Image (cartoon, rainbow, N blue to C red; front, side, top):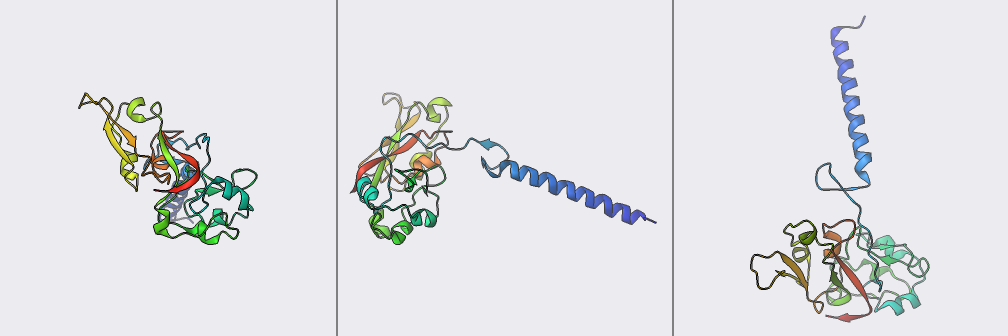
Length: 215
């Protein structure tokens, strides 16, 4: 005969199982999305249409990368921030995008594993001075303009100090602030693009340069 104690245990087990099932369902529902810290879902980032693609620091530029890359995918396999992927670049050569992360100045893993010279080995110090692209601001996508809110995320996240906030109207000290980009200091790491709150396209993105240069 089932006792009251047994019935209580059964109810608790059912309740616990129900809670676990609900949590599992919610987790699966949002696992492939990015959240704002709660259950609100943010739209996935989309890769901008870059007239000039980005290639990794150490490649020297687009043409050297294209000439020597054999699409072995070693660089993509060691990239800790998912910046390098096997998305088509030419054929199946790695492509740099910043929807999932950005090219952190302290990381040189791809240059350490490339076997062909498509990405030459560089030091962390050298990487911080290599410009692989430059940031471009899209006024029509910036939430300062679209949502009328204050935002300085791109300035705060820039590791080289290439972005500063200025008054939208130079003659009005109460006007909202918008980003000004010093392309001579920008290295194209993509921190501003990746961390921009605008969706699905970032209001600031990195345009690649054909030949890398030192900044």
